[in-house]
Every structure is written in C-alpha cells, then in structure tokens.
Length: 587
Image (cartoon, rainbow, N blue to C red; front, side, top):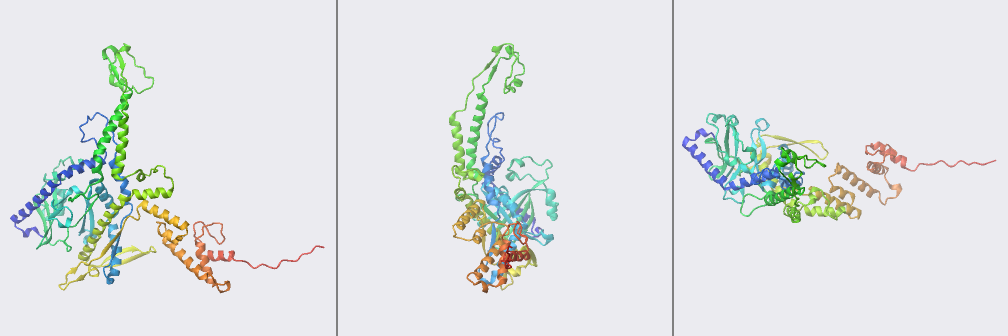
C-alpha cells in the first residue's frame, strides 16, 4: 500500500505500535540472547572468554559442544527429505503427481541443501530454527517465484504470550541492520526520509557484531506482521522512525510466512532447547579440571628458587625458557643460590572425575563413540555393530521427524503461493526414470477451483515426507538384514536390491525380473516346444549379467557387450554337430 495515502499522524501511530510490540517481544527474550551468544562462543571454542580466570594461565578445552553438533549434522543433512503430494480425491491424482515434481524442483532451485545446513545447525546449537517462506517478486526477471531463507533466531521476534503455535500469535516479525544505501535503493520513494540510527542493540548479540560501523551508515529495518479481522494479513515495514510499507491482505493464505523447528520442546515456551544448553556447565567443569591437570604436569618437574644477587643470573626469564633442555648447564657464582622444589602430581581423583564427566556428556547428548566411527567395545560382528548403531540413532530419528514436519509446512506454503501467483503458465523441467528430460506446464487455474465470485480457492493436499530411511546407519542396517535374509532364501536378489542405494538399480531389477519371467515360461516345457526366440532373449539378458572377460562373444568386465555379442555367445555355447569318426587300420 502506498503510505502517502496515510496521514503523518496515522503513519506515526503505526510506527509507534511496531516499535512498542518489537521492544516488548525483545525484552521477553533478552535472556535467550545472552545464552545464544555464549553457546556460539563455546561452539567456536572460545570458552574462556567469559571466565574470570587469569588470562595468563593456560586455558585448555576439549570442545564437546562442537563435536556433538557436528556429529549429528550428517544424519540430518546428508539426505534431503523427499516430499510427496497426495490427492484427497481421485480427480486430483494427476495434479498431485505434477505438484510432487514441481515442489522438488522449487526446493532444489532454492538450494535446500544449504538451507538445511544453516537451519539444522541453528536448531542444534540454540534449540530453535526459524524459516521464512515467501514469494519473491524479483525472481525470474520480475516474474517472481517462491523463495525461503533461514532466519537467525536473534533476529526473529514474536508475541511473548504465544508459547506453541506461531500462527496464533498477535504479531511476529524480523529485524535486521541494513545500510542506508541499501534501503534507499530498495525503497526509492522514501529515500529522502531514511537516515542512520542506533536502535539495533537488541539484535547485536554475537561477538562478530560488537564493533560498531565507524561510518554510522546502518539503520534498523523491521518487518512486522499481524492479523486483522478487516484487513487480513498485514505487513508493515519500518526503518528507524520511517514507515516504508503498509500492506493489507498481503497473502491469500492469511498465514504468517514463518515455520518454526525445535530441537527439544520446552513446556509452555515457544523457544526450544538445544544440545549446547545441556553441555555448557559440564564443559566448564571439564575445562577447569583440564587446567588443573596441565598445570600440575608443569609443576611436576619442580620449580627453581633463585637468589638473583648471589647467583649472578640477570635474565631469569631466559633461563626459565630453557629448563626443558636435557643436560642444561647453568653457570652461577654460588651453587647454593639455586634450589629446586619438589614437584606436585595431580590427584588421581581429578583424572577419574574427568573420565566421569566425559561419560556423562555421552549419556546426556546421546552421541556415543559409534557416531565418531570408533569400535563399540568387544562387539566385532558386523550385524552386532549395525544393531548398536541403529539403537544409537534413536534420538536422530526424532530430529528427522521434526525435520519432516518442517518440510511439510514449507510444501504447504509452496502450493499456496503457486495458486496465488502462478497466473501465467510456468514450465518446469525434470528427468524421468530413464533420465530423459520432460516438461510440466502449470498455472493457478490448473491447481485450484474458483468460488461463485471467481476467487481462487487454495486446494487441500496431503503431504507425505520420507525421512529417516536414508540415514546412513539405518540404511546400512537394513542392507545387512536384507543380505542375511537372501542368504537364508527368504527373499530374492530383486528384494535385496530394492533396499540398496545402488547405481542403476532400477535397470538391474528390470532385467532380473525379465529373466525370471522368461525362465518361468520355459520351465517344464519339452525341448522341442521351446521357442528359439525366447531362448535367444533369455540368453541375451543372462549374458548382460555376466562380467567374465574370458567368455566368448566379446563379453567384458564392464558388461558392455551388445545384443549381437550375446547371440553369438549363445551359438558358441550351444552343442555343435560332430562328423562321424574316421576309420583307420594298420597294415
């Protein structure tokens, strides 16, 4: 909406409302900002920064927070969830099938892999990740398309009274620091009013943001959302004290364009709990114990008491730096002017306490040595190790379920935006099962029906998200079990291949099924009734499965022989007629 239609008094009232709600929300989560700053420092191994310990003392760390987060990341991001759009009535079968392909294309174009890396790492460190799913009118040279991004939880604010469902909040939004030049380019109609400000203290949290811009060219940009009975979904954009945009009925779906994902939910709290929150205290204790051990190792070699005047030694610091050298000779005026004190070893209970804390960290996080690729004690059998791995990833499965719910909400937004904004034909290219390019044409009329007033109605679809099956340990466990069942004769080779992520497995399965079908047709038939063409086809398919380079007919280890080679192989392997033996006699 053009803000010039609003009086100056009306604009000021709107700006004051935005800043009032913003400060109210930020004050409610101020303590979280302090925690998140600390968790980020610990993740980066800057764990002594907030300690009152003398900075000249050694400051050792074993960074369990980083290890825990990064050990879980591969299980959450190595395989992108696979969304499937399902119809709720038979007439929408084809539309749902096309939507499934389109949704996957949109996810890929928005670099879902990178977004998962950012979002899941935030979820593990801070307990909550926020995703914004919106329609970007600047994409595709002004045609526009669906977009999404991960919002730092520091920059997101929400009505503090809402503790569960984001869509029930009275308001929510984001705040970021932007350069004045950027804002003037983005909002040229307000360029003369935009000025730098110093109102971004609430979102200046991480140590990388501690240094202020010496040019003082930054302004605080707030995007504020609320729901109104008369005006629907309202979007307000404010930079400092300037109202940049006031838009009503912004999206047809009427929802806040945000999705929340939590690591561990907290009772009656919108914000979740991450891995770092459970580890910080134990990490501090462990670091202090390590400090004791390392310092005691240094003290174990003993310390020197030097009489500077009697010994004649002037540069004691230089001497101290050489004490580690074997056979060191120290020239002194008086041998009694230097005395070595007995060293002190660290108590054994300190070492035991360190080991106990390390074990407790494993129990709290659920990240056992299996995650790090270490052998699980006395278990050596592959099946036993895989079973332990499967049990160890139980928590990961819960995190994957939350990730599936996140992707499901994102897909719902994508469909809603397609209905509202795909007013022109859109074309999407994908590869079919044979890796051949195919095209889908789609517009809003193909997706949705209209009511009696001609308004589009967003259709309902069920969204199924496949997650967890491709988790590395789960897949290895399933493949191992499938091989054992095959060896026992319970399932055939085709069923084993179906469980595996094997290159070209679809082609191999199709060939094995064709061999089984042809073999079934020939089984039990007298030799004279067997069709030679079926025999030839069976021989061709069988030859494609053999990789012995010494076979006749041009077979090789890469299975690149032609059908003609296979037929020649069949002929060479068939019984050949023999001439009657020659009679001989000796005279």
